[in-house]
Length: 203
Image 1 (tube, one colour):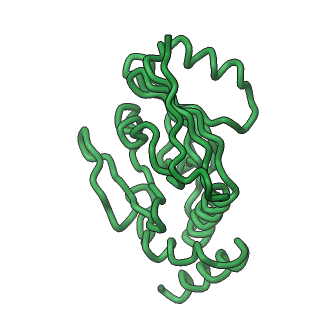
Image 2 (tube, rainbow, N blue to C red):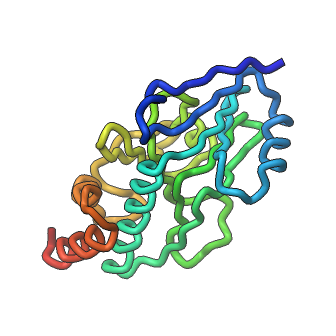
């Protein structure tokens, strides 16, 4: 029988995500949970080596995720890059015991038939849970952005491991710290307008 561990170190903070991790969960149970949940947005399910995470994102989690997505799309628009968002696309590989649902992810370029996104974005608002970066590594996602503790980190897959990078491999010329500097704007439209102005000015 699977054991249950609640991981809610910020449970008295209104902005904390709600996170539950089940251990010793067979892959078949993970697949069954995905089927039972269907197309609803939450909880988001992740799996790694028998640990299954169920996470309900907070309001602030969703705000950061949405800002990041709109800023990525603003960069692509300014630079003439074709891309499509695929939201919390369920990515899974039973042979590698790995499954994740990004906060946002993108296929970049005109070919939308590929089985993995080029870029996945994860907002880590509450500590704990499974190692998402390891899950993405096993799946072979080329680039993962992690927002945590007010910082945005890009990890680029080189060979069989991720390396931190100040720039994006999937979106050439994208300055990660510059993009992240607009996340504190009061509205997403203010963030996008300011970011586009910086890009147009060579910032």
